[in-house]
Image (cartoon, rainbow, N blue to C red; front, side):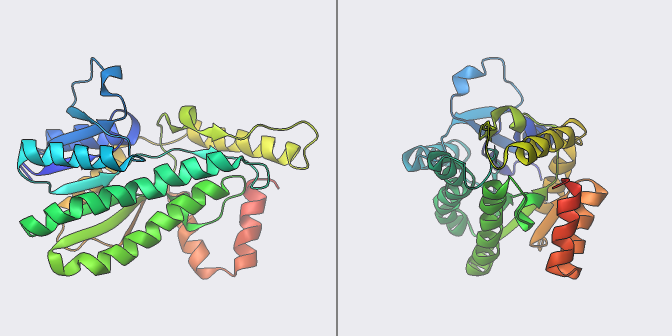
Length: 269
């Protein structure tokens, strides 16, 4: 594990910072990213490089900078992401585009940027941070579920395409963890008189309650560490509370309408 070079998008806070701090303590050379590293003058957990995952020039420059400094790139962790809530009918389209650009297109840009180097050096690991929400369409979080679900499917496809190059691709699907994603999440406004007004407001309260009782993101960091030590990690790696992970098992065995009824009951819809 010593001297393994790791690049983490969105490494300045939350899950990304926890992963980077944990891996640094294990002997990895970690580079995190932030759109504006100068906004973190006291950050000393590991080195931050400038990166906007929505900007392909920024992506290429950041990857080149890490390879120039370290001579190689062993692990990419696609962690940068944004949240979004709102009725599908009422969510502004520019916000839909933004969440897809950040949560889906951004990781794709990153994977395309690092693969030439990983092929050249004969191997590497790509870990996409998806979400348990990506395995199901959650009410009033449909666009977030869609971005994470799409990233999970790309993970499955790319994994098969690059296996002969010694590159491993997998995902970690966290449940709810205590991070600052809620502060940066886009909430479509609760509109007075909207057909969704009461149910949407009720669901936002339930989402916030889940975040308030969320777990420690160090669990995700430990899952990352376990994966990068494995030769053949699983495709899907859910991490979270028992009931959140159990919900995936239920979805795989229950009839669709029965599972839908469970979600309706959970959100009191």
